[in-house]
Length: 411
Image 1: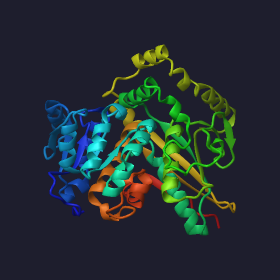
Image 2: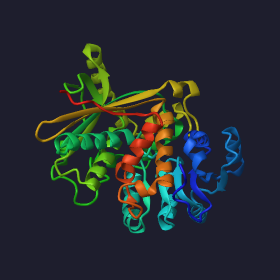
Image 3: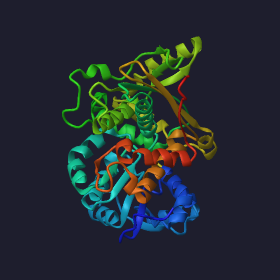
């Protein structure tokens, strides 16, 4: 794949946060990616320590990668980093602590950006500060490019596309049910603790936290996060609250507004527990346990949880990550009663292996296929994975081995 988007900058992609737990995985992914080798992509590792960056470069066998030393709170360093590359991929969280200067620099200097944040209050602030400028400049700032929230985003995209192709109609509702196996890394938990510690947890309850102005329905209560257990006939299973739904659903609703899914569109997602009485009990127990997030708002309990959690930069073992998996089943319905179904799935710990794949393919879509992305080369703003990357990301993930399937229509 020849590099189409070559420019005068030193690099095409900088991997910022490369010495962190997920950051090291992105370095390995780039070093082994056939498109990176075939295109002659110029890429570099970014972070605050020259020595640590060089150690990661050596450990990941990436001698071709450059080094960019830049501290997250140094505005001049962030500006120099942004001016050195066409795309920034960032894994340096918590993003509310370490991401704001970098996003500001990327917008100012016309550098496209992707990250793996799940920090919706922070993204809301980035939208307020930078969406208009990024839109004017044609700069794509795309958070949520990991497990939160690409499977949710692409489930809805596939549902809408399939409904339109088969019936010439839009989906008025889509729901997803997740099955996951895998652990957390310290950076993910640090982001949650920072949201709770800074008093932003209340914002998480707003179903339309990320929506553009004037795109919220009059009655938002119909879109509130599910609280209790339920048996769902469409999935043939017991479902419980999914801990990532308060992130993913907000991102999907921003996509729905940006892409014009219609004022009656609704999206919800759940954790799939299975069939039978054991699954029913698990769904009930999980619903009760969902209150633990409320408990974590209290300082002493949060401090205890932090002491028991892996620190930033740490995470599951290689064997644990390789043995993980996720499966997202989705069902879309039209106002006329038509139904479409499908699944998105992958092998590997969703918070690490799958997230690394989704993030890196998002960055490569920007670096290698900018002209093929939704809206054309000049389209920009604080976007979502669907509104900013669209079908290009679907195809890249399929080529990378991820399952994105639509169930054939019954004859």
